[in-house]
Figure: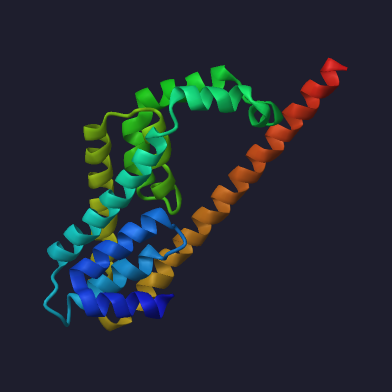
Length: 208
């Protein structure tokens, strides 16, 4: 995959970077660290420059986030209500109150969530879905997404430009950060699943 990414960027420059970052938002396993740091390195030997690379990467980030936001907006309250009251909701122990609490939280903290999650691997893509589900104001969503994406892209592109031909060392550094984040997220997900199972078993035993 890495060689394929490098070939696209070598061939299409800014456009290639924008399309790859858009794809990374929709398919998180694509390594944005490679795209951005290599893009930074390219500014040292091609006609590409850092502002242009940051702009193209940010356009790709916002484009991908907007697609996920629109997908989230398709999950209307009626559809979510059906999910919560249906078989899946009962198995997971979900309730309508949980949905309302989540919506209320996103109404009050959505700006911060969308902004800060742009710095967290995988989550930076997925946060766009609940933003759409909660009906977050589109202008606010685009502003927070653009700002968070711009800062993240600027950091990695500048790191790649500073590292030069040693850009892969920057990839390794940010790759370690990504791996640590994945471990934390995986642990949190497992804990959440265990909590739901335990609550389900407890409610089942209390009914008997």
